[in-house]
Image (cartoon, rainbow over all chains, first blue to last red; front, top):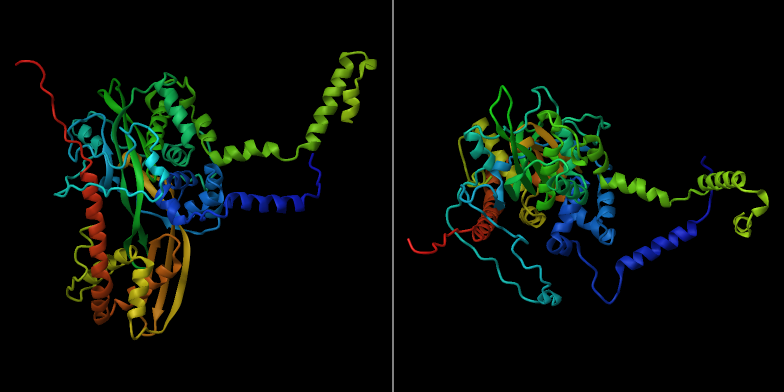
Length: 368
Length: 164
């Protein structure tokens, strides 16, 4: 039952005013600029873009500032903003093979065309807090450079594909139109393209935990990182009024090709199987987790039994969206006075039947 | 991309295919110009033509698609903000522009420049003042990124241990 109750306007207005004050913090310190957030908390901005499913660094940084650094609140803000904009259309699919690579590593081949390019990574750091960063004016060295002809950075999946040792890139039926879960309600079972869209915007922590669970034996897939690459790719868009495909600029993305244990059948010789991860921004943990979960969710294709949470499509896809999840969890704090009154009444009646009536305590009277 | 930007001064015969290719190269470059670079060119023109807005400038979304496995069927990765504008100059030339982001003024300036560049004389000025230096800046930035990345390439070596 819903009963309208009025009141609280003044408290709400003052709470929001207080929020603005706490967000600003100590007035003797300079306010954060959007450029500072993009430049110095870039990976936080990337995560907001990835899980909001909207690539725009400035808006993501604004959302982060407005949310006082609360990632899910920032993601929520950006998701809400995107609903106010018209859609011009869909891009030409990104060509990650033509990426301007800023990082590329493979755990399956030591020497491969293009080499192991570490890029700006936390790997091999000692995870010791750096007191130099306490000083905001400390000088930082310019990056080292190595000039010379850049080698083409070949896909690891293409290397394995030459010998037919790995399944091909995923193909949907010829007349398949890519599904869009922002436009159509979800239905299960879900085709792989829709699952990938859901995973690409899914919560990093949730996907990380699920990916980890497959490694610990809950739906084991024997993964190897065939390749992780991060860098800039062009976004191309067909412009009908010009009859041209224009390049609208570059976005930074992270791609993970997970190579998993082989499958074969009476008809087909054994081949490595694959999981795929693609994420806005620099986010290797998310891309890796996504590729582990993508592979785990392909049980149906490989005739595997669904024995673990990471393999349960409806469970994974229905719970990976943190905006949906937070909406339902956080709604519990909204007034449920009437529902609770009903429960209170019920439990009292049950207790009354359970014990003699004269034992009614002062507490119960006080709650009336 | 880099090859497409290699020659902004390209001046081929007035062939329709050539003109289309020229326009694509210019528009791809204009999408990467900063607002300041576009403003500088526009403010530096001594005879700014009268023009009207045909559409926008407006901001919307483009659904960015990836491919399953990197090269398979397309899937919807997520959206990106895009701003676009279409303008018509007094002489009838129509210009269009699209760029990532929410800078509608930059999109409108780019559309104006696209319209202007359909006149060969104007195009030469635009190439000289904006497109050539812009292509140079972008190439230098890409080269710097590539060199910085190359410096983090692992050179493996093997430790030989023990006798023979």
